[in-house]
Amino acid sequence: MNDEKIIIIGGGIIGCSTAWMLKSLNPNLKVLILEKNNQIAHEHSFQSEGIFSAAMNTPWNGYKLLRQAIDDFDNPDSLISINPILFITIDFWIWALRFAYNSFFQFDKKIENIYKLARRTNDLHKRLYNDSRWKYNHLHENYLGKDAGTIEIFLSDIDFNGAKRRLEVLNKKYGERLCLYSNLSRCKDIEHHLNIDSIINVKGCMKNNSEHYSAYNTQKLAEYLMRIAIEEGARIEYKAEVEGFRFENNKVVAVKIKGGEEITGDKIIICCGAHSRKIGRLLGWTPPIWPVKGYSLNIEAPSRLKYSAAFTFDKPINIGSMGSYYRVSSFIEFSTIRDKDVNPEKCLYMLKNAQIILNLKKCDALGYWAFQRAVTVDDLPIIGKFPKLENVYINAGHGARSSSLCLASSELISHIILGQTPLINPHHYSPNRFWI
Ligand SMILES: Cc1cc2nc3c(=O)[nH]c(=O)nc-3n(C[C@H](O)[C@H](O)[C@H](O)COP(=O)(O)OP(=O)(O)OC[C@H]3O[C@@H](n4cnc5c(N)ncnc54)[C@H](O)[C@@H]3O)c2cc1C
Image (cartoon, rainbow, N blue to C red; front, side, top):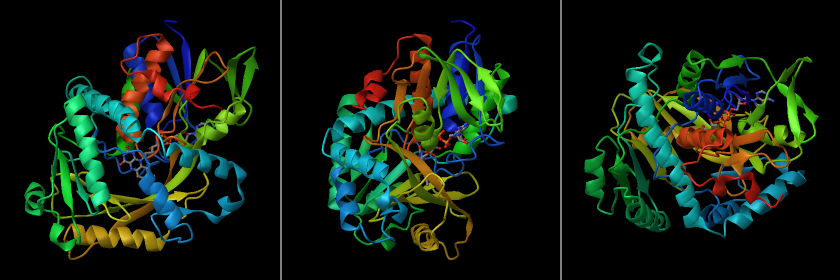
């Protein structure tokens, strides 16, 4: 157990944080990351928004989003859209029906289950931040944003009332200090760089007073975690695309790399984000994950927001501070793993709204991106032992929240693998919660 060889497939934010956590819990482990690209976190972690407020996360499969998806079904410019190729894809419709079914149950419970991982990730960030200043100062990367938490702005009564419910649960049960205001001048006082007067129908805002930082650059964070893991003895192989496995009884004894090489290992962890569906299929179980495309763009902004901002418009947009620039993100497109097309109208919508919200005379995008989130049918990540195989594990399917949940998810999977007692009940995230 002490010097086992653990192979992590996938070098995105989840794979890198898993490597970091395994090495910090047991320095004797031999940890190897296999990444198909020639750089860390250059797929879906590359231009993620990076907002990681613990209390802001609500599951996607709830009544509101489902209703919006049905209403806007045939409108390609709406918040939620479906790539036409999926109309004839049976796998997608099976996934979508399961997703819709889960929208009717346990919404509040899911908020708590997301919250627990997000809160623990926030706490682990404090440790990481301290380590970055003292122990790993030579590796220090400025991955944290410059803001001091997240402010949420609500434009409908449904969203405002939903926030009130979230506040009641999280403040009472977990001691958060969420404050909700319907008084707009109070909202303006909290974040005076936001041009709240320019937005019609603002119902109020919410701020968590127990949060002290918010956005970070997910790709830089992944690189930083990887560099610490390497310093502690982990290894990474680039251009190592896993395309098969060698089995003995109920075990995987080697992974097969494109080009023919085989690499042996004692335990395997799948951290392939939206690609985990394909990898899982090779192992006899297809995790119920679907690629859901979103857009992000970077803008220069002279004004300094104190907080990252999340606006629940009809088409919600998030604005996170990345240091010298802001990152704006939005849109939900059920898509295919290869679809990286950028829709110019949607980007223009994001750009225009960012310009209004930030009260900018001129607003040019520094770049546009489209990436897939790995969304599960109940919008909770899949963390635990892979079905039917003795030595395979999975840490994937974090949807729109990989950065928010990465450190705690990695701690949970590491505790499970190392036979240590998890700090968070693993049951809610286990692959066993699915009926297939
Ligand atoms: C527009 C947008 C905004 C977002 N905003 C936020 C936010 O504000 N907060 C938040 O927390 N999250 C946010 N997210 C979500 C989050 O950033 C991503 O979902 C996350 O980065 C995914 O991380 P991952 O490590 O699971 O997957 P990935 O980053 O996709 O990493 C998987 C890695 O596995 C590798 N791989 C795949 N297959 C193989 C194989 N066969 N062999 C070897 N390697 C393989 C890939 O190359 C890749 O590097 C956002 C996402 C999007 C798209």
